[in-house]
Length: 147
Image (cartoon, rainbow, N blue to C red; front, side):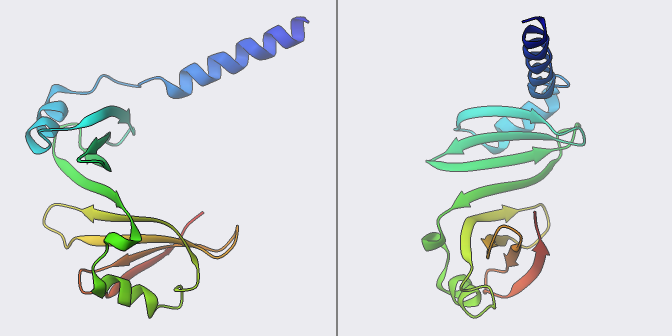
């Protein structure tokens, strides 16, 4: 009985430590977020050690936005359906060697002073997974292996 109680206590402690916010979100970060995203729902903040990430919903779209500790915007990711992609991006994907792989997620990635990218995460089996990044014109820009 003592072993079970100790195991439970250790488990609760680990869960609390791993889910706890490491630092308070700086006011510069929350102010930058509020200026960029006026209306949001279900806002949750996460401390990623090197940046702060807001996970939220806007107009029914799940999004995340990352900021430096100084409040400088790093990127915004919006989750969309494959059907929401333009014909050019769908065509680019269909012409790729990954067209018959299972589509896991599709997102739009916006970064300051960079080209907007469209990420399609695909899976062939439990081992073969890829992050495919397309331009607005459907050109495959990057192809990263993922776990």
